[in-house]
Image 1 (cartoon, rainbow, N blue to C red):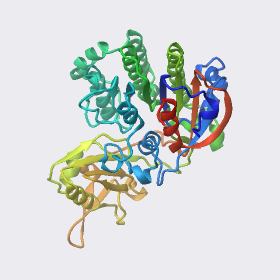
Image 2 (image 1 turned 180 degrees about the vertical axis):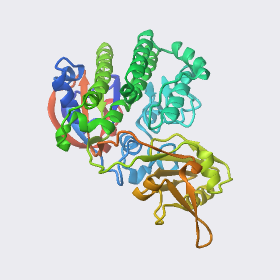
Image 3 (image 1 turned 90 degrees about the vertical axis):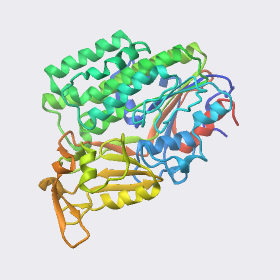
Image 4 (image 1 turned 30 degrees about the horizontal axis):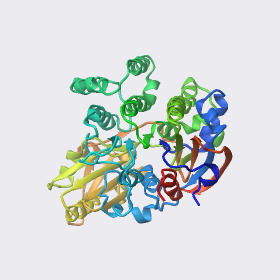
Length: 468
C-alpha cells in the first residue's frame, strides 16, 4: 500500500507539483506559521496530509545524497551518489522519478532538482533546468540558459561569503535573456531594493543568497506558463542557507543565548525572511494546482537542528585552484567543478588520474602531520575534497607538503590559493527528519505527521501518477 493511499483518492491523470523545500523540518514550519497566522502554508496545512520523512542514508548527511535517495527510491548504499557533479555510473540502475515518468509517456518539467545535470540532449521534457551546481549551463528549452549562466556565475562568485556587490558587465547579455524568459520587473525592483539596503547596512549581504530563489521562481513560473506538465519539480535551498547560519538567533533557547544587539535581532529574522519567500511561492503554486485540479507536495529530504561547533577559528576556502594544483605538482588535465563550501570537486580524464590526484592532495598536512581534508573520496574519474584544517593549521596559516624524503616543505596558505575567511560559524546542521505535506484534489486532511522512510515516497508518487 502506498504511504499516501489512506489519505488520498489516487486517481491517475491529475497533475502533481513537487516543491523541494531543502532541509526544512517541522519545527521551522510550525515556528513560521505561529508567527504568521495568515500564511499560505498555514492555510494549506489545514487540509493537507502531513508526514515526517526519515532518511537512512549512511555516513554524514548531505542534500546532494538525500535528494537522490528521494528521487531514486533507494539509499546511498545503492545509488552511491556522494557528492555534487560526481560520476553517476553506479546510479544508472536506479533512475530518478522524473526519468521514469518521462519514459512512461508523462509530460515532465524539472527545475533545479539536485543531481539533475545534464539535461537530455534529445529534449522530450516540458522544461529541464538542472541544479545550481551544474557543470554547464545547458537547459531545455535553451531559452533558460541565460538564467542558468547567470545562476552558475553567482554561485561561483559568492561562494561562502557575499562580498560588496559589483555588477559584472559581461553578464549584461544574460540579464537581457532573463527578461525574455520570465524575469519580472517587480523582481528587479526587489533585487535593487535589497542591494541598496546592502549599501546602507552590510548585514543585508548575509541574506543575498535568498534572492536566488526569487529569480529562479520567475523562470519556473514562465516555464509553467508555456507548458502543461503532468509532473514538475522546483528545488530551493534558500531557507536551508539561513538555517545553517542563523539557527541560534531564531531559536536562542537551544543555546541558552539571549538576543541583545541590533545585529542579533537582524539575524533572528533571517530564517523568517527566507520562509516568507517560500510561503509566497507555495501560495502561488497552491493557486496553480487548484486551477488544474491537481496536487502540491511540499517536501524536505531531511531537516536541520541546533549544533554547537565550539570555538570558531575561521575556515579555509580555495580561491585559486590552479595555484593549489601547481603547489602539489599536478600537471595532468583536470576540471574544477562547482561545489558547496567546504567541499571542492574535480573531474579528471581517467579513474587512474583521479586516484593519483587523491594521493597527491593527501600530501598536504599540518605541522603535526594531520590531513587538511575532512573528506577525500573518488567515484569514477571524479574527486571530492572537503577542506577542514586543524586548529593548529588555522592558527599558523601554514601547510606542509610531504616529499619523497623525510622532510616536509612548509607553504603559506596564500601560496596554495587558499584564503582564511571568517563568517557566521553555523549553528544549524543536518539531521535525518524532514517535513512533507500533500495538498489538493482528493487529499484527506491528516495532521499525524507519521514518520515515513524517504525511499517510500518515490513509489507513492508513481502510484499517484498512474504507474504501478
